[in-house]
Length: 319
Image (cartoon, rainbow, N blue to C red; front, top):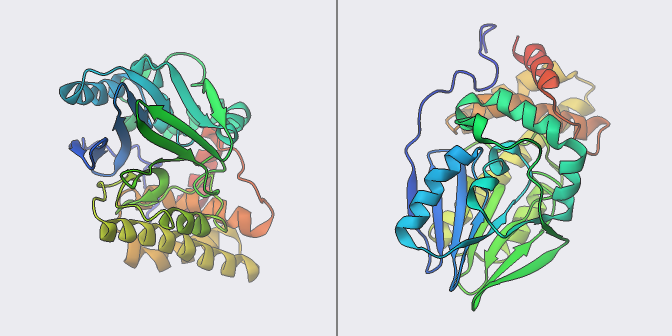
């Protein structure tokens, strides 16, 4: 952790290679070596896309691959949660409906603009063609609380809120007939969970609720598609362990009255041997530890990240 370390992922310029693979009769995974994933469900009469990529320009690559396997209309876009890198590509799909939880809608109202500015500043490479993003926010056209069922012809698709974790609005897409789950950022695989807007004490239980569905395959928020029950179990366990390990280290330090800076350095050193090889570990840790310290001290709910707060945090922890 040298003083010259670049802010966030400004130094992350390497293009990732994309995989588009079928993981069940109706589900496909668009993955890119640790960059944000998109899940696709091709039903009898239309297509549902979960998480849209960061810009309409980037979404075009998803659409191109969908068109290689079906000409059915893309009728639904699901926002598994609201982070700019997941949702700002939505306009490209021309969908009839943009679906999200009411909690996600509320987050857009509260912090959408700030989140957008903050994320674009953090991850230049992940917002290729940012000029193609239309002005304003990406708004859901329909919201739900708890559970919503969408029928793609005879194919049942459930949108489920199984608890807070990555954000308060987290939604998973579940195909009960095929036991396939599109988890959004509640689950990562060989990629560091971003937890700047997280609920650390809730997240492990939420993962247990996902596991109770007994998925046979899962598209995580980042990392390779998990295509066997064993791989799914590994993805769930890895994410759960990381969140629990951050919480254990940070809450212990906070209880001992240590300041954020000290707790950050101790937690980074403690977790680096086990998780340091995961994608975006160095990028996520300052955000994750800052949020975790907040939760362990005096902020039950995540504070809003702004571009200015990002920089102050980075300079204080990494400067």
